Image (spheres, rainbow, N blue to C red):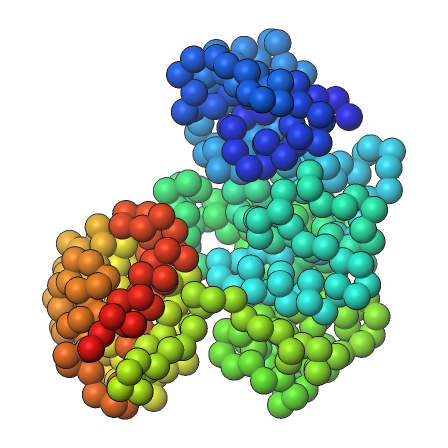
Amino acid sequence: MTKPTLFGYGLTTKAIASSMGGGCTFFDDKTKETYIDEFGNTIKPSSLFDATLSDMEVTTPSLKPTHPLILSAKNLLSEYDYFLNPAKDKKLPYNIWISGTNGKTTTTQMVEHLLKKRGAVSGGNIGTPLANLDINAPIWILETSSFTLHHTKVASPNIYLLLPITPDHLDWHGDAQSYEADKLRPLLTMKEGELALIPKGLNLPQTSAFVVEYETSEDIASYFDIDTSKIRFKGAFLQDALIAMITTKVLFDKLDYELMNSFVVDAHRQEEKTDHLGRLWVNDSKATNVDATLQALKVYNDRFIRLIIGGDDKGVDLDDLFAYISTQNIKLYSIGVNKPTVEALSKKYAIELEPCKTLDIAVEKISKEMNQDDVALLSPAAASLDQFTSYKHRGEVFFKSIDNLR
């Protein structure tokens, strides 16, 4: 394959360079002076890129559409377009793409769990770049971000599973309409007979795909004849499981409830823990947006909820979340950089709020006020990087703070 010019010196582009045997040229925002790494790759400052000297560019997914490198590129490809170009004369794995605002990682893992014995491998946004996936595997299951979809123009899935979407990453996409359009972009290239599962109410583009629209988990179960009483998962996890099970139903006309029920959900998503007094604490640190937090609140809405909220909300409107909270038995404990927003909305909707600044302080305050039947829920509806290295780090600090209670 032709060695492309690579935008961004990150996980995705490094994997591409490695698959090429090194010797590639990168342009990276963090690079101040040109240097050569241990693999013979040349890394240059982004400002040195000259489009007239490049025949092909592949970008890391995170670069915004307004980034100078993206705007100046003449032959730009996404990672997907580079490896899964249907015009290339090679056999491609059967592709299942999974996207959505929340739940796409869990659903991708569930699909891999169901199809692993058939040789399927997973990657994409889930952590394994396409360059490191086995091209000879019969099935690729790709967790697909809106960033990747925005830059993808020719690659196409055989099955596209879109979980519910709510406005997210608006600082990257610009507005909710652009975010939705990117989530629906695969429909533009899909062929007749290929399945696209899409939430109802979206502005669908013209497509040759066979589109199945759904509104609830019951819609999915009814259409694909899946018995939800045989599935142990509840709430958002039930929907993830149903969407995952569609793949074996469509490909092999098979539903393996026992195998589905043996799946273990990752940490930091509605992960329950009891403290030394037997009180329930829930780590939902992966809830980095409004919809994820709403899903968690609905799981525990039969109890008084002490909700830890706040962080970097990425410019998303939180009104709908606070409107819902105002109808429930919930007290808020705020952390993170969006403290002014949380305080203003709490006042607007007359919601009891305890400003805490940091997570350990929130845990201590909740512990002093918490009754045996309450649930303490970390579901921040915000990203974590204002105070933590990742949502995982935030969840770990949460559980460590609980362990330190006495």
